[in-house]
Image (cartoon, rainbow, N blue to C red):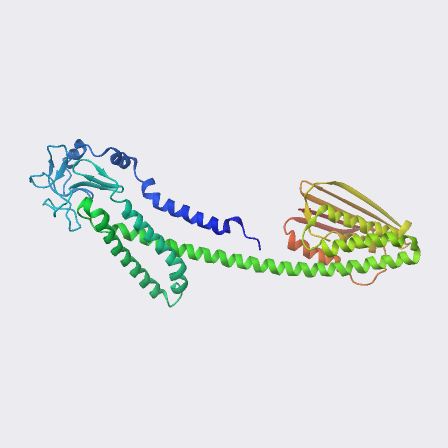
Length: 421
């Protein structure tokens, strides 16, 4: 079965990369405009003073050092007891300071933002989280694919869910340790401390783990459905091949009967008839494996009608109305011939005469095909398979895209077929 373009490996890789890029840019895209402006220009002294003097009880919100507000002579701000620096510090122990001095080399911080920290001199350090975020995101990507390719196939099944949960607990513990190492390497020197990686790690990890489960379940359902469709298509191909094999001998049986009749009546017409028969056989053997151009199918019908005209000579009035045809249309091979065969087989009345009218046109992608014939006493008592066969092929190939009307009115038999090609 031919793969769709979106199933190509290169397209799948690009789609995964685009989804990950969007996922990791969400914090930036969803950041309020006020925060972006704050980071771009840095804090203003009046903003910090007004924040802490607005009469809000209790400690300042997360992101600010604790203590009493104080202002430095150099324009920077700090919060803590009146010490020589006039600032509180972010402690090296990993939590925000409570007004006391931090460890050696600690850097006072006013506010933490998703892109950096605001230092006491009003500068915004956006570089301290760059490598930290990069390696954390890389770990989450590895967790996602390890989850979808290893853990879910191995453990996400009845009686093994406990192993699945334990595996994720171990992965999350590894991520916490990894984040602590990253903090020491990249963030600690800039801030002097960290409020703890758990709150910044748990939600992204749970989101990535849950996304992996959903992705794998949806992918499994899609693959199962695709496999079912492929099996159905193979079954349909096999059935169509059998139906075509039925049509070919049935048709050849009728044509050879025509050759016998011509040999008995007019042997001089036998040679051109054999040439036409050769053309018909070439079409059936070499060109009728799949859908064929509509022009080829029409040419096939015309050759068959010419053979039948020679067989019945003047005893059968055959009228063909070939209407306009759109170019580039394809059709199931040997789909129309059973209706024409049926008309010649049953078209003569009790006196041996008969009339057949055949018409077709294909406009705007819709084929309209009709056959009308007089209905006489059936001479050939052998059972036919043509109409049953063609109905089944229409259902398989043009379901909900065709209408077939077959009826008898008086001495006339009508067939009208319309297909959206």
